[in-house]
Length: 68
Image (cartoon, rainbow, N blue to C red; front, side, top):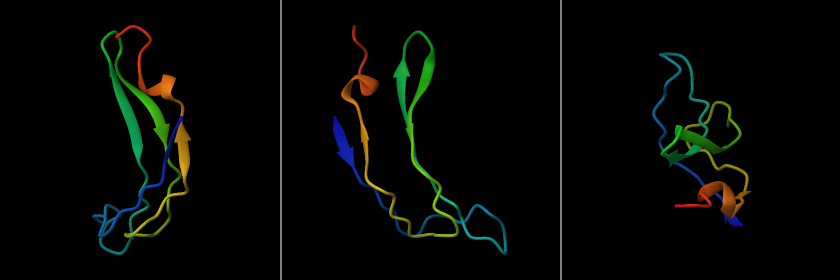
């Protein structure tokens, strides 16, 4: 099991002139048979350009293929 907590500073505003970003993180892995696979997605942090996401864990088997 891998435990992580991520944060960011000065996230680029992607919500237009009057909005503030709602950032999130996606973890993907390359799988030769099916391209990119989603491993984990964090929660959205509403209206925050300096987010800190809740701690989370990703099981080791989700990150690695059984037969490399």
